[in-house]
Length: 542
Image 1: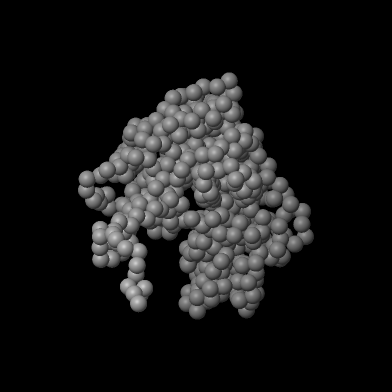
Image 2: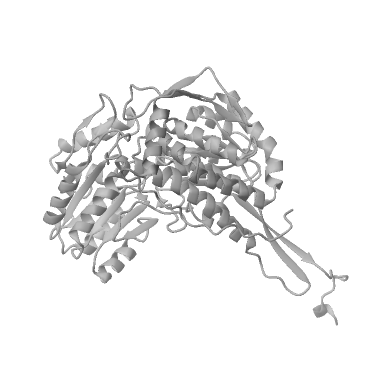
């Protein structure tokens, strides 16, 4: 047990480096990028601290140059999954019993390593295999992950320190036990920081983890495992097993020790996993914790009083940064008729100014979408809009996958507020705009609330405080993260805890103490110093 009450260093958000031309960080990152781009790596499974190589391997190629091979990764089969679970459970007792300050120290060290020697490595890996530009990689892979580690350390101390009241002769205590069993983390391609945090948050609370990263994110996942190792994370606490989803699920969800799912990915997959867990519920030692952040159909709505240039900038950044491959990216916009001409001119000008190409060139604002599957799906939506009578392509609309999976940022204009691209998640650089009669403000808010099954992020632009209040109330359940006069992306750890409800997930707010609470099982302890010696209460006397 710890022999003291410890305060961790006060968490402060990591400063985002600018990477301006001529800066040392820019030169270092681009040098690291080229070195890694021109090297070849084979990524193993990480099970119980051992690197395991299998007979089933897949190539790794940059989305912006899919004919170029940077290495390969190994895929796990059922036997490897079983081995990973055994290794995790073998490590669980020692890890769970390790004083909390030592667990915290590991992740604080990871934050410092990430801010220093690992910064260029993790950013370069994210740029190469996930096709993020310099700035987007810096925000995600370095800064947000550092913030997750530091703020989670602060949150856990806060969580442990909040204790119940005690009365005379009685001492009441509250402890937060790790879950009984292992946590299964399924992570996406688009945010390196989210992938690491989905593993690290449960581990910080004393749990052991089986981690299935997306095949398109395995390169940066390897850097994360290297980081954890150097930071001192014990063998078996986090086991990384890239694998076929059905194959790993067949083992994990039938195991009696399955204790929790930490998921970020598609809504349909999450719903299927929930159903699978429900079918196996009688097999588990306890009721599993199910935490998921899924899809979005995020909106921007402008009131007639809004500043047109600010709206246009919110659209350009909110819809097209990282090719719209953010669950928070603006995908639908509702613009008032009185401002439409001015906003239209600005957004067309903005989009036409975007440079597109490899992340190797920092001047490229737009890079490639993640895979051929994603490319084909997004292109189909664009083609659909081109062929419909109630929609037109305002700007963009072209695509080419001959060398990389490049899709022009595309804006669709529709006269139908229920048009297909207004309510289906596209997950790419496509925004659909509906121009409403400026007089129909309240009616438009109702349309926004009822159009989508998702409720992740949304933004309102207005200089009229009454209109802002109306939007905030009318859209209360339409977004878990709501923005006033800002784009609906860019949640910062410790400032805007992230998550949504409805079809967007369980809203357990990554980047806050609320998420950590899901990975513990509280126990209350009552100690009486002067126990009763007679069952008879005073009221029983005759």
